[in-house]
Image (cartoon, rainbow over all chains, first blue to last red; front, top):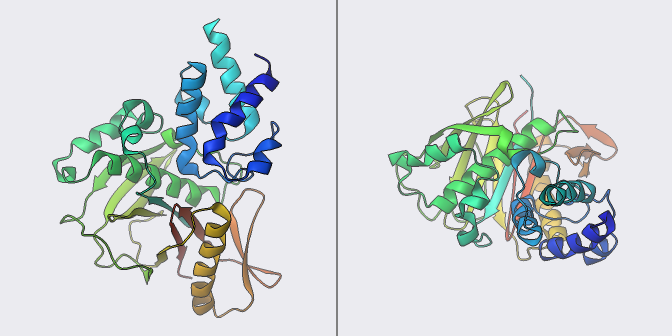
Length: 85
Length: 221
């Protein structure tokens, strides 16, 4: 998967947790989940669990810490899916 | 000793109990040592899902408290460790009628926690009602000089919550600080800063919102 393909799929993971649909449609790697998409921090673990299910990966503590913006999420998903190959 | 503020609120009507109690979920931010705290017989009346969100709210409160002075700090809940939970002497009731605003926790039935983050020790005090969990953080054990408030809001979208929590705390700050034209601006690190007109006021404060609840804390100057 390319980073762009991951980003496209990531929008579907984030969608249930944001009402900022315009911001979601226009996300890029610098988009912050909390300040830009107004996702409540209490949903950050939901997003990690949903990403694990979607990509059949396991995201550990240290990796989860990187998932504060879209670029960080893509880094983690890319790294973990590559480990499966 | 640094002066700061940190708080968090969880709307218990919005949590997914089934998901919360799955090991796969809570182990993302609760360490094995922390999980053992739940075996304390004094917590027997605390549902496990409340325990999970109690710890989350303590970790987030401490993060906000520290982040005011370390703007680039990333929230890493697994690195903010709860080492002790002291439950209230009796099982809390349904909670005070909202809105509630007061100084210190007085006779409130609180869960008091000791929290270690890096080389520093923090303390949190939490109220758990049937509707919400509200937690305040401090760097010493007394919360006697911490103003706090919780209220319900009609809508749960972030924009409405944000407006409501600002109005809630600004009304209180106007009474406490005796300053005019108060407003809150978030700095580049996302930390709320108090202004009176164009003048920045040295008054730490913390805002929180989740679901149909908003909350604030700030230290008495």
